[in-house]
Length: 266
Length: 266
DNA sequence: CGCTATGTTGAAGCTACTCAAGTGGCGTGG
DNA sequence: CCACGCCACTTGAGTAGCTTCAACATAGCG
Image 1 (cartoon, rainbow over the protein chains, first blue to last red):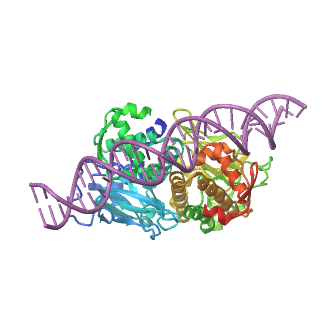
Image 2 (cartoon, chains in turn red, yellow, cyan, blue; image 1 turned 30 degrees about the vertical axis):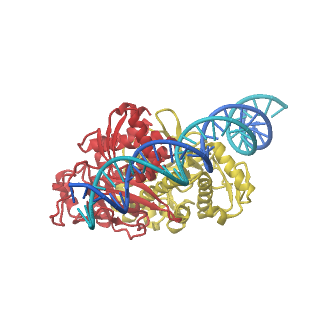
Image 3 (cartoon, each protein chain N blue to C red; image 1 turned 180 degrees about the vertical axis):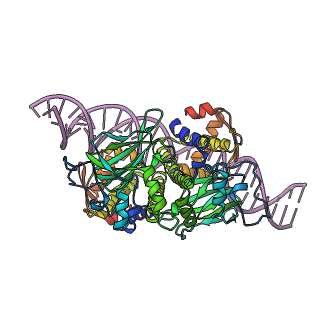
């Protein structure tokens, strides 16, 4: 399992600018919701997330140019959709604060959580290829996203090598991330999946300067189970077993990792 | 299941230029191996795969410019690696003929097939984000690939809007494809997975002008099972059951689909 | 022609699922 | 303030589906 974990865990540290896309949910515990009174204008140069977001590998001059295409931002309330499957694709979205899940719908009505996003990550890349979004993006808590019109971003990429490289890396790292999830789903047992999920969240949280041990899960057991390809009861049982074995401490959505090495060995 | 199938099946027809990346293996049945005596120079303008490959949405003038960055091609014998996980990333590869699997290695030694590629599809996108390949790409038969140095392609993308758009769509469609596989792995039972696999191959084959019904699988039952997250015995049993029910006819690696609608309903 | 790969089939076992009952936290309203 | 209902979560018992182990069949290749 650690190959998967390493890839997931080390990516943010090694090249934060390339760490985007739907992800095992991380989130900023105790992160305040965005201030209620803000202008709908924004810019990257002053953004707290600039180190791990779109402009991650840009210098100040380049980041100012990026500001010219990121005009405004949008608030999305908990449970609301940023976009829905089938919606026309116009923009990608950089998550300023909060967290999202992406949900793929089956023809037969069943739904599958395909990713969790947290602050600094980018949503909407799935819409580029068909000009229509392929999934729903639902806010797990009150959240704010920067709106990045994609045709403007493309135009700027033709002028800025550094931004072009960043966009390519962002897209590629999403491909690599999904490969990791495929590996997890196809090869790991329930315990390994849950352990990998917890460690991934831990790593992403840590990359943002938060605790590696104390997790505040924003999603339900059912959403975790959907993402990990198992039933919510199995998620719950697995967490209970980890707790019984002294690996973690569970208090509802608050999970403390007590033995990171043991979790990694599972 | 058909949401997944539709997405997989219709993509090539609707926008062949965006249909790339690791895929449920399709391949060209009865396709001859590439001629043994060919120059290692090549160009897109005269390539038989130009309609579904890199230059899919380019006009003739643009395609000539693409030729300037695709200098040569490489032969890869069955079982050999085009690249291995950890190799430095220099180029992406357009598959001229033959077929590949990509394999993710676990730390603990187990391996997982993460995709199958066929003629006209593009390999190596996973290497962009870290400058190192994330998986092994192994030829399932004697194959030929066009070598596309990525920094040259990036430079050309800054000059050619149409090519830039193509590369972005290619990357995005790979993300969407992997989402579909995640859905398959997380939500579908063994029968549904195998049916989806067969129909996906059928559709991709059909998009290349080959039979929708007669499949010539290049991979083993074990490779199919690895890709679909199940054991080779289960793949074999499922194929036998489909045959017993009159849905398909199995003769080793030759599979004939007798009832496409019924397979889709599974 | 025989060897090794790959594929098929059967029987037993185990993992995760289903169904069901019960617990705990939180917001609402009396 | 507490009672209530709702929802998420936990836990147990029985079961289904896939895996494991094993034997055998077939195909490809020297």
